[in-house]
Image (cartoon, rainbow, N blue to C red):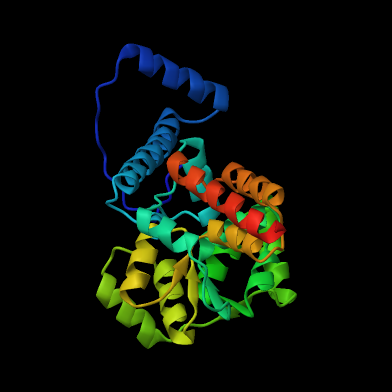
Length: 283
């Protein structure tokens, strides 16, 4: 049934007889009007087409990960699920890899965008953040995007993120509007609101930005903000002797299964780095 408050337009289309027969059969089986079934099929079909177009643009480097969320109007959990089902890897640049292979001089304050929170919660390792950093902040916009969602009970990770806030592992912080507006002016529409908020907060508290959105990392570098990805956290745990190489490899395997897909050649380099530091730790 069409909502009486929604503006509509009548259109006519020519359908093959076989498709018309199928539509009528489905409508009869569902006990619904044929036009109702057509509208639902159009909505679902258009959503799928829109997803494919956005992912094509993301894969080509024409759209950022955070921008895809805003354009599609999806929560991060559904976006990553759709990416994984299509076997779409996160864009991970040579510069990102170089950053993740270098240790930070200090591990004072970290600002998390949504990707590390999603991936770490999926492998039940959010506490890892507090093992590496003195303070861990998440912008209010990011926290709400991850937890203020419909059917949140379908996502046990949402409970883990909320619990991490209650337990003091991460702290939710508001970002100054002036900094958000400044970052928005500089990067235009190339980043979504969660990414902009994370970069603005990193600038505000002078911390390191943790994100797996390569476009966010590029903008952050232009602002002299140090950036790291989720895999850096695993490497650093090995460097500090907090886990051994077997545990690190197992963790990375779980992250990949959770949707943190990166190019194979870069994954090999990361594994070699783990091997190197594990030998140093054991000596």
